[in-house]
Image 1 (cartoon, rainbow, N blue to C red):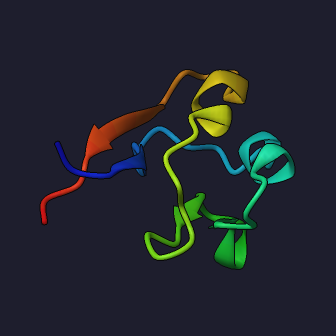
Image 2 (tube, rainbow, N blue to C red):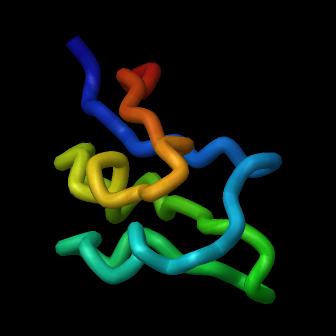
Length: 65
């Protein structure tokens, strides 16, 4: 089984920043205030961002190796 990673539905993200605040690794940014982006190298797949997202648009997927 591969490493889990967070994935943001870019079309639905409203850049509220809730996910960014709870990420323990600082793997989430909101460049230009448009939508959240996940740095795959920093993301450990903990799922805190997915639980915190009020819109429920962040999912955890298994990364391909």
